[in-house]
Amino acid sequence: MPTLELHELVDCATDEQEAVIRNVAYKAGVLWPCLNADCRRDQPRSAPRCTSCGCDRKGRPIGDSWPITYGPISGHLLADLREALVEWFTERGRPLPDAVSFEYTDQYESHEWSDWGSLHFGGRTDPYCDFHTSIVAEILTEISDDEAPQHNDVLTIALPR
Ligand SMILES: [Zn+2]
Image (cartoon, rainbow, N blue to C red; front, side, top):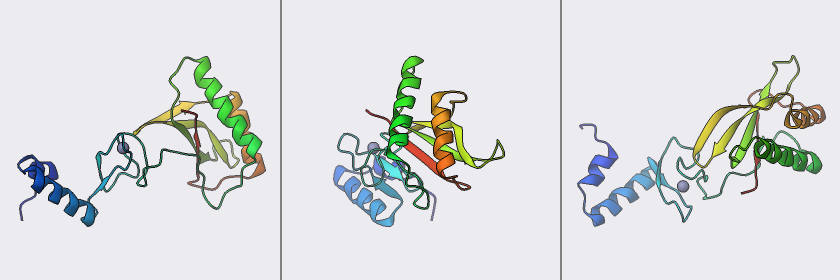
């Protein structure tokens, strides 16, 4: 069978046919519909989050997360980290991301959360933002001191919208 992009099929379909094509694609798992009522854009199977609005497959906006094998993280440290992140962006006049993710690192010969993070803006991610020598980095060190993360761990902190 010749290879065909899904949009080529949809482009030449009637509205009724398009609905059928979408439903087949959802059932087959090659597309998933964003459940955010303000978005509703179709997403490819490979996207863990909506590439447009950033919601997950259940329609939830990005929230705090860390591996189930890690933590719990003390509530006051989480609150301090969130506050320090908001201050960091506000002081620099930079747009506040929806969330910031930190990764495990051993670059300082200890196992800890990186003092750089990736920034999530809707479905877009800026892969690198350096918080070195900031209060954000100090709090991450405190969290690491309570419990060292493991290889491949990711800590995501959602910021107030
Ligand atoms: Zn969406």
